Image 1 (cartoon, helix red, strand yellow):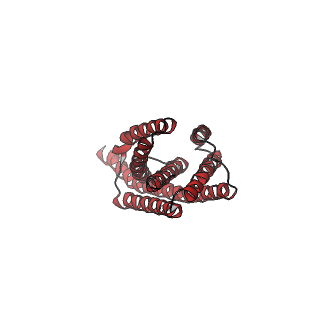
Image 2 (cartoon, rainbow, N blue to C red; image 1 turned 90 degrees about the vertical axis):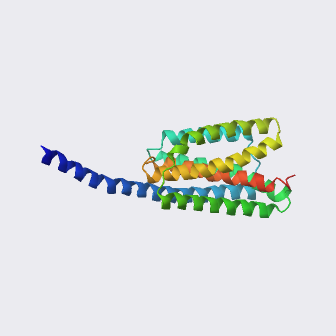
Image 3 (cartoon, rainbow, N blue to C red; image 1 turned 45 degrees about the horizontal axis):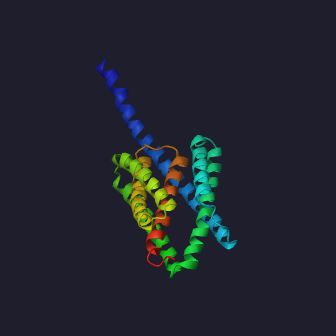
Length: 228
């Protein structure tokens, strides 16, 4: 009994460990490839919006479009349609970003430097946090609950700051989002590595949203002193 019951368990553990590591590596690779493609597509739509001087769609349309497309991504994440909605979502968010960048370039003193610095800090932060999560092999699942509550709170405070025109609160919300999005990058990367997230489409959307919010929050913080 011991001989037959013990041997298969050793084999199962031996086979499952490399298999799970292989799956995690594949998900991580696919996530980064899709993330790079969506960031590029988002940059193109942002550039077109700037080139044609398109107006910002406004807060209501932005929220409806974002949450509607995000819902569609989650509903179709296990099918080829999920890829279509990922590009629809990131393209739409790129379009909303174009007029924001144009406003900084036109109305904020040294706006070009503000945009470039925000971009550089975002890139360095993402690469640094991702590299740390991958190399350390740590799992940051303990941050999940805190990040969820924090993002909901920051989102609601951001809406209050927008509708009641509270510039001080808006600045505080931007600082909150910088910290929360940095934590979300660590959390999502750790989940991919440890098999907590096996769908590269959903992982890509989470990382894209983290990068998008990190960049826009840094824009606000860096441009605050000279913002018109």
